[in-house]
Length: 499
Image (cartoon, rainbow, N blue to C red; front, side, top):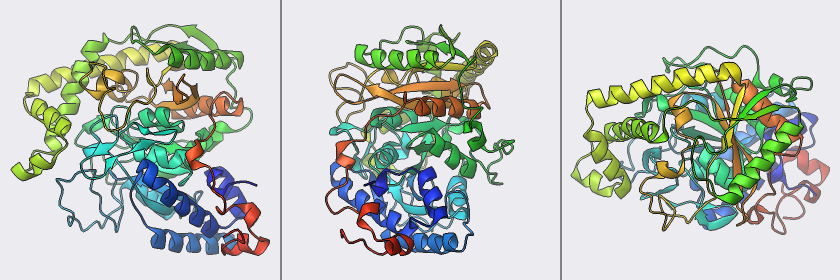
């Protein structure tokens, strides 16, 4: 018996097309799963059962006519509460924003493309305030727990999205990534996530964090990410910095004959020039790299020619903290008092930078981009750990007792590639000694999104990527599953006999 919530988006749409599975039945199961896991992990700001079921019923009618609205018609999707969604509030994790602000009349570009394609919106997922840090807790919504150990963090800032996907509350989610915010929680929660090349997915409104901020797919595997990226990478006139549409669908890069790794030139950097990595994490990632080499890739252990990490970190802080100051600059005293204390600290620091400080950070960023461009003339992909550690306690910005001050100190593998605007993905490659997920990061040259997806897909196909689902997301007795439904129920979405 297959749990409906364990099916990927690719599997769902194939079964919708054959007529043996109902979007309404799948949506009911996803909503039930979201409700069941919410008390343990706090992944959702809200769910919209009425709206989701209405969208699912419309999708079911389209599939019955053989006229789906798009490649994700009827697939349950969640949206990080940073992105606008028409008809629902976007609070961005902030208790400082008025609850009645709005009128919430627009979709963000990626949300609009999903709506046009018939996606079913289950609800919005948690984020730290304005997505400012690499864990997900906020004064507005509290902390989001890890699906494998709810007392640990899900990571951030797209932690709610990662937890929802890992637990089967919709196979697709939209996250945002300004310094690792889809890859960090993907690594901690054992799912796949891609930060595309900057501009590949249009963004509106423009982020206060500027061209560090990307929108990316968070999914069960690389094939689902390619499916989702094909939808959300479509143009939108509201983003003046968007790239031209891709030359061909990303899904085509995953097809037989193009999905292998033979001859791929791969650089493997286990420490990015000196990062201290937990031994169990290092062992899991190295094992995945060795398996990749066994699939035919030409792997060379080497570090990319980046500036020293302290210099990179200082430049990133200048850019990131300035963006935080910008997004909150109009707050009054009462609003500032309601902010996350850590956010108040970086806002104060960001407000102290001058134009020359900012431009000096831009200079570092441009040098990094030039160096990585030359590096990828020699190597097709760069592999690193996604993170040097597994998930730590929820509700803290840094691991307790670590002596660290800011989230950027334990995420040295992710934020550099926001600065260079390169595509980067996190693939689950095993678990640490504590049984929690470990991620392998795949980085490509700018515009090489299809190559990153192709390599990740090959890892899934070879059994290198992916880990067992968390026990918390396992179907309980009576959960809706195909084995519980009569054939007519599958076509109509009527409740199964097990209900």
